Length: 279
Image (tube, rainbow, N blue to C red):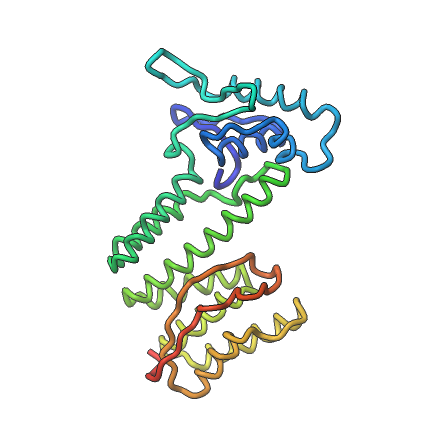
């Protein structure tokens, strides 16, 4: 799911079929073990204006997926993981076999390690979780469900990357942190949270002039692309650097897709300031 949608069995890759069949597999996979009604699946794949043939097409896609999915062994013998009843369809697979579920599970473990102040173990957990990604999530799957889930997973991935940056700073690996945040800024140039992190890492690395340049670049980009001024917290970070005495603490909180506007409360709790020196 964290890339092109494919089916793996015995280290061999299998094509799950045409785009809407992939969309069906995406819905069933992201809602493992849940019975999903036929109407829900039609809405998830086609949206609010499905064709008259949607129900028959759904039946065909289910039959095709059943042929592609490997039967699993159960106490009663071999059983098909994709089953149906009067209420709808359910995909019954181990979550550990799906990269998206594995990513979120490993991320939860990494966060637990971080809360336990075990930075090295937590960092390894973040690396394992992020290694699950192969590209854009649910690539090739159309429909409203896939689009929403693709957005959610992309946001979660970006937050995980930023949390990993904080761990690098805790471990004193500022060069690596700076390289990583610079790469992320290149991918998300209008994300002010990333710009704040870049400015602080530069400041702590003794590169205050570069940090000020980042602020100026961000200010110009926001005005040119979105027609907005820098957020309060970006301006606050700049003000603290002008004073020459910021001790800046970063916290990753709620995020949204970069460049999609600035919802209320998006930047709340990102920065905290104390008297001290930029280090």
